[in-house]
Image 1 (tube, helix red, strand yellow):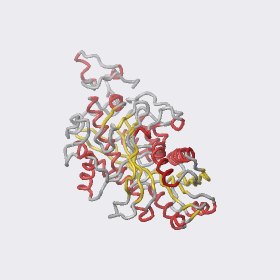
Image 2 (spheres, rainbow, N blue to C red):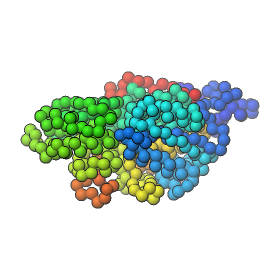
Image 3 (cartoon, rainbow, N blue to C red):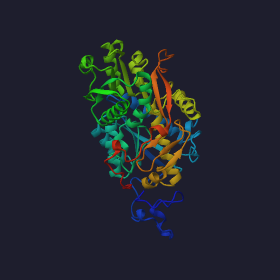
Image 4 (cartoon, one colour):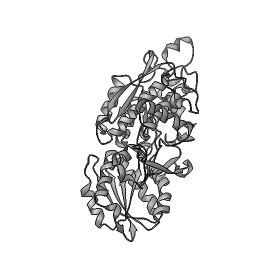
Length: 447
């Protein structure tokens, strides 16, 4: 990073050593005050968990909070250690982060950007949080990422799928483990082509904010490239709970595919309305009418129940994966909470471990040191196979799962099945791809 002269280890992190005759990097010369925002001075370090506890994504937020609490336990040496045991980096020893016990504060984003920024600001200014993480809305993630850049702390994004988070709105202090709309489209398009052919007419219903816009753009581009026609694109308010008025026009549109660019409670309600209108039984243009949900989650599938049967989509991770890391996480989470974790839970657990590991490798809580340790970091053993945190945009690149609703589920949790694991190479794009252009990463801010 351009604002840092770090070496990976042994960095003198506080001004207390200045009198020892050791030259400090330029970034630390203001030695009468903390070298960076919320530099920990006691025996503990505070992380800020900012999740939607109310609003349309509250179910995702609740599961994120469960995973955060589990990650803190594991970092502090409690429980069975979970994915600390499978993570390819072996720096974390269950003694906190850099010997400091991990503590945390929580906030409610309400799935609203203003509320999320206010919550994060309070955590940083009043609670001394050295890192903010969380969110289940890309609008929230982008807003909080911008705040963290201004405040001089690291933002480890939670569930955010908009291309813009690591595209035009990317920031040097922000990092995303979760995949994005482009990746969903790149994974889904070949599967949809094989299933439904190249002569299709698609109608999009889209959540009217940054995630929906970029998901719609990505899916439309990928399906049009294989021959599909986009009949219409209709935006729906995030606060919507009844989508009947949006579903009715689909019936007379000539469309034979409905793409629901909706997530959380929005997707549960719009899919339910679509099934109530009989779309799944319709034959249009001589073809069975199909529904596609580009971004899926177990929690959404549970909410929508039998309506998800046979419907395809993509997901970042799924609890049924049989690699050692996924099994370790599912065991830890299930033992503590009595049910398997969602993809939202998985990604925020990983982000917490990745932050702690980066701080340990850098030997500092300084955000510029942590950022440098994350940039270009390649790792394995966190449930998605080999993964790269790309330096140029702070986006993780890893395998993407294509899933569909199970026809014969065995439990309320066994609702999705993985039909294809799309290799990372197929979903990787250049940093200057048009869907991600328009912003600059900028320089790390240490506060």
